[in-house]
Image (cartoon, rainbow, N blue to C red; front, side):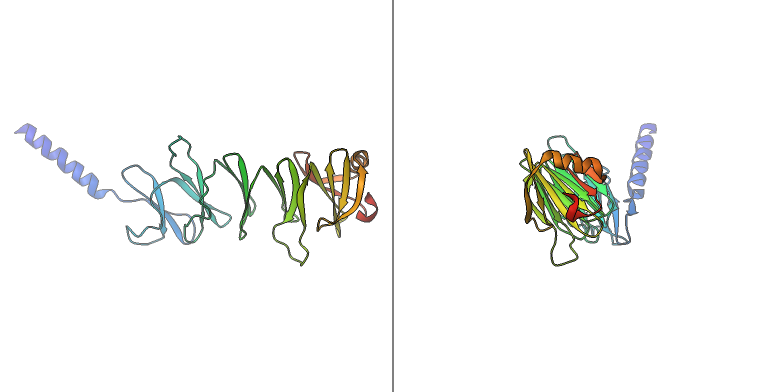
Amino acid sequence: MKKFLAALAFAMICTFATSCWHSEERAINDILSTYTVKENGYIGLKKTGAPAGENLTEAIYVQADEYNGYILAQCKKDPDGVSRWALLDGTTAKPVTDLRFEKVWIGKGFFTMQAKDSKYFLLAGQGIVGPKSDLAFYPFEDLLFTKSDGKWGVQEVSPEGNDPISIKEAYNRLLMITDGSENRFVGIDGKKAVLLDPSGKILKKSIPVATVTKLEEKNSKAWSYQSEVGVLMVKNVKTAI
C-alpha cells in the first residue's frame, strides 16, 4: 500500500509539474519575442502576444537579440559541431540570407560577417555584399573597401549623388586622399602607383611608390585598415601628388 501511495504521489507531482510548465516569452523589440520549448530549451521567434503555436520560426536557436534593426540569432550546433549565426529580419523573423556565419562583427549600423573563409557586409537597409576575401568599412564616407584575389577596390554603399565612388579591385594598396571637399584615390600595384578620380578614371600614371610614401609621412592618416587601405587628410587634393 505504501509503495502504491508513493507511486501515486510521484505521478501527481510529475503531472502537476508538466501542467505548470509554460513557454518563457521574452520581448526582443517592439514586435518580436522569443519562446522556449520544453524538450531541449531552444528558442524560436513569434510576434509578441501571439497565441501559443502561432510561431514565426521553429525553436532552433540558442539565443537571439536585435542589433541595427535585425535579429542576430545563434543557431543550435550543425552536424560538424559548430554553432553558427543567422541574420533575420527584425519584423518578420525571416532570414535575410540563407548563409550561416561562423563570426559576426557588429558595427554602428552595419555588420561584417564571415562564412567559412569568405567575408560579407550588410549596411542596415542595404543588400549584402560578398563573398570577399576581406572587407573594410569607412563609416564617415560610407565607403566599403573590398578585396578579392589579393587586390583592393572601393565602392560607396549608400551614395547621395549621381556619381557614386566606384573603383574596381585592382590594387595591392588603395588610399583615399581628401581635403574635406574633394576626394581622389591612389592605387598602388607593385612598384608604381596611379592617381584616380572617384569614378576610377586614371588621372596620373607611373607614380613612384616613394612619392606615395612621402605623401603618407607628411599628412595625417584619418583611418586605415591592415596598412592596405586608408584615408589621408591633405591640404589640397589637386596638388598633393
